[in-house]
Length: 260
Image (tube, rainbow, N blue to C red; front, top):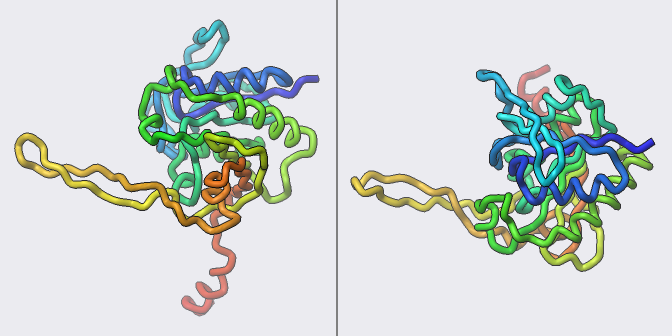
């Protein structure tokens, strides 16, 4: 029997990256698309709890999908508990732009959707494609002109291996980042501390009142073995992530501080 996959993202249901993943996954699996109606980048794992969520069946590229008026996590919850898809795997992506380092894991809607699935006991993989121009992240993902061919190959290879062999013990999500120019190597990595050098630009509106843009260049000095370093070398970065954020190394120190 073909495995069942729930496919979602944070760029929205019309994104070229989502449908590139769909094209790859349907070569070996039955795929149901449940994705946000609109762009939801950088919402992390936030959930809509103060408003109702609408999920409408739509046709995109001649294929059926569910367009969810909410966050990526909402899409996963609707897929699992309202549509009762019962997938063997949840795939999130392909995201337009890399999701690397501590920063992205905490803020990415792509990874947030995968973490939500994992928290409900469903293994999940997040796929992201590096962009050369950071401005591409802010363009309409429906009309993006990136080349997804290497992404499709990686999706097929990685997902089939995970479905065949199972997830590694103590790993809840596999975070995969694909370089804009792939040099043919997979690299198992850990998260870098930073992706961007954080900066803030102050500007004045027409009335002379200040406002701010958070910005900053890409971080270029990540240590070897990190996801940021791997991508900079043209390798596909594969990073296992866990839901448990407990600092086990800090437990004894905390016990000493509070004399427990």
